[in-house]
Amino acid sequence: MYQRVIANTPKFLMFDLQPLIENKQFIFGADYILIRPQKNGGTLYLSSTDIPLVVGQLVLIAPFNPFKISGEALNNNDSAGDVLHFRLNALGQTFIDSIQFTNIKNMLDNAKQGLLFDSGGLETVFEIMDNIENSFDFKQLLNILMLLDQLTKTPSQQCLESHPITFSTTKRTENRVDIVLQYIATNLAEPLTVTIVAQQLHMAESTFSRFFHTHLGVTFRQYLIEQRVKQAARYLVSTDWTIAHIGAEVGFSSLSNFNEKFKTLLHVTPRHYRVNHLSLRENIDTSQSIQGQLQKQLHHWQTSASIAP
Image 1: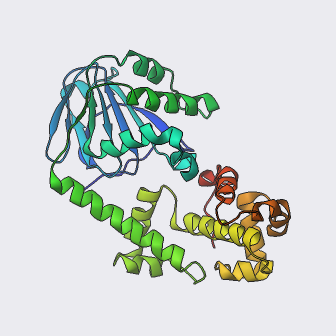
Image 2 (image 1 turned 135 degrees about the vertical axis):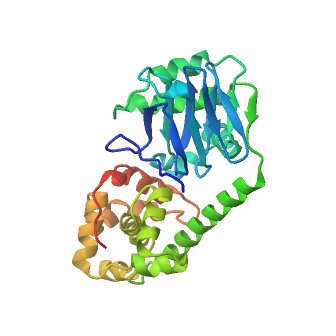
């Protein structure tokens, strides 16, 4: 049975730095994991590979890649190392897809096999990691980005995992997530519920809710509201439909409900959003400006409380 990764930071958006400790169950989570051992004697277990953890190494593991760590050196009160959990969705897809992020994105894609950095030359990375704190200062986000950028410049990135079972399991999980997201996107106007969407994966409601939150980082209801508001914002800019029609088109049960949820996420009413963004209609077929604006305005959304659609 896999154990979920639960970040300790109350408003975990981008990262969480935790001490390196033993875990007896395989962890199967939605976060990237960067492991820095500061004592010898621990062992990292992937599905078909065991890696002794040695001081001076770094190990990078991608989401949905089961792993566990054990060893007597991890069971005392002294610090045995650090584990940095981080995820990218707080940055926004536009940023992740930018050309400036390409090297980091390629490295993270390779981390699906597990990457071992142990060739030396990690001093700068360790120095950045020492400056990372679980705070919400903007400089901490910059530290994470600088750390990832520096890792792309570090030679001898050894892939750890090549067992096909790991990748078939990971692929099945990714396919199930894709099925759910595609179903939601196609049926936004319908009265979607956990029960209805869970049926698409033949899951019980409670199992589906845990699955969704683990792999998307938000609850089903939070995600559904965000997608409805995002689509409504696009319609407000790209069409002349009435606000009531747009609310119904994206699945809100009433105009008042639509206005309330839209203002909660974007801090303006649908009417004011349309007025403020009419300039985006120029070259709208080729422009990504709407998506960019939405990413900025939804930056804080993941920390908001669950809002019933």
